[in-house]
Length: 96
Image (cartoon, rainbow, N blue to C red; front, side):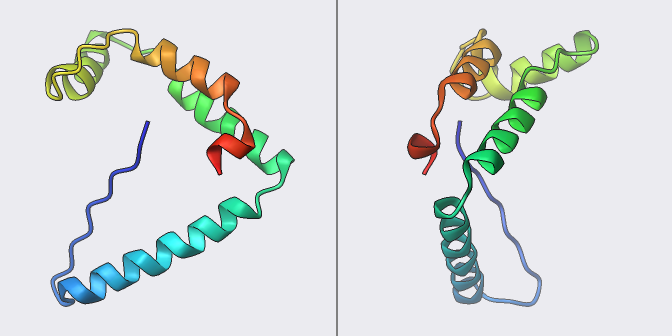
């Protein structure tokens, strides 16, 4: 699990984008620190619902395997199950 962001701007330079990203990440860090137990559980349950969603057809399954396993050379074909298990076990303190 992780976070990947791609930010582009036709009118702002790298330093502006970097400063804006740093400001955003600082604000998000503060929100995470202030997260209530109930809100944390709601967030985890939401992510778990999305993560556990089964592929609707072979094209979706292939796209998932291609983008998450083949393209990254990871070959962890039970990633979905492992991520769901991790979400069930993570604590708010670990998340913070």
